[in-house]
Amino acid sequence: MGKIISVVNQKGGVGKTTTSVNLAAGIGKLGKRVLLVDADPQGNTTSAYGINKQKLVLSVYDLLIGKAKAADAIVETQFDGVDLIPCNMDLAGAEVELISLQNREAQLKTALVMVKEKYDYIFIDCPPSLGLITINSLCASDTVLVPIQCEYFALEGLSQLISSIRQVKRLYNPRIELEGVLLTMFDGRLNLTQQVVSEVKRFFAKELYSTTIPRAVRLSEAPSYGKPIQYYDPKNKGARAYDALSEEFIKRNGGFR
Image 1: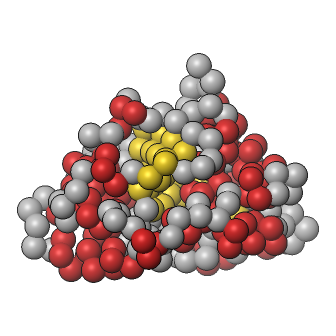
Image 2: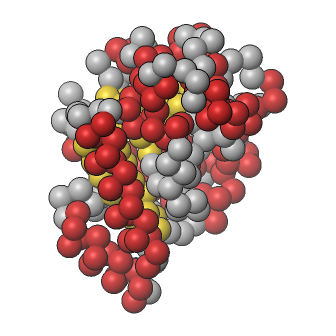
């Protein structure tokens, strides 16, 4: 039975989609079966895997409003071990349509449980907000992975996010836990970076990944070529970082059995 992980941060521009795309690819390269769910209406994860958002027949939107099964929406990607449930701007309207549905917070959970056993890990790339789509993702998930940028306001946002996760745990999903905190856009030469690292370690010493993701131009370029960084430029420092993160993630989850 696969483990479902939401990649969440309500603050945009922190490397959430970059992490979803490249961590899934790295784990797939290590021989695991991965399903990546694009639950951000911008559809950047879909584009980053070279899939045309304008030509989708089914998407996450259809799952959320109950018009399709997850198995029918899955797209096989060209990258080792990774399948994708894509999305496009149709998803932006799902928040309004969900309001009138019964068990509206559990629509995605109901859909994903039907395919969960096919995969080792299912990653959900959430939108940069705490609306109904993100709540659906959190209700469906076993754990939450939080990428944060090494800047002051990231700490403020992290405390708000943890509070929201606790509320979801209390109201909807008692089993959800924090998978880990990942430092992105890391530059160890900056004093502010070191201050952020110290503060995060104070509160999340066990959850903080030892792997950090550096600033790298190639990480930003790769999506425009429809490839994860490991396939676009495997020797780049960003690719090496996500490969290291993939190994650390699997070790934390019981190793390479």
